[in-house]
Image 1 (tube, rainbow, N blue to C red):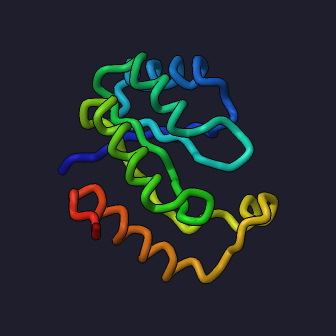
Image 2 (image 1 turned 60 degrees about the horizontal axis):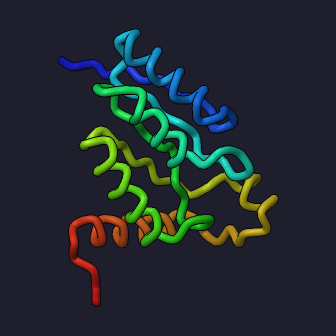
Length: 133
């Protein structure tokens, strides 16, 4: 049985600090490092990009993108770019979004399950190269 060890950091740290933390996690034997993607802090994809430059083995994840503050096509674009940049070490988390942050940003928070399911289908379609156009 394989057991995966991961650590998650908030996205309230600067890119250089996140890169340092990711490198320490890699040196410490962790398999994955995740970063939150809360609104009003540092961009999680930017933090993962910084960490990719400071690491070589550890998987790097954004937890999570939500289809309210970012359109599914943009999530797919960022995910594909991170996968290329990290040479396959990128991890993608998708969630409904936190009501508190979405309310602060004045973003509509409609029924989350259907919206999230729809976004996941769209993201998978786009990442597979099966765009509808």
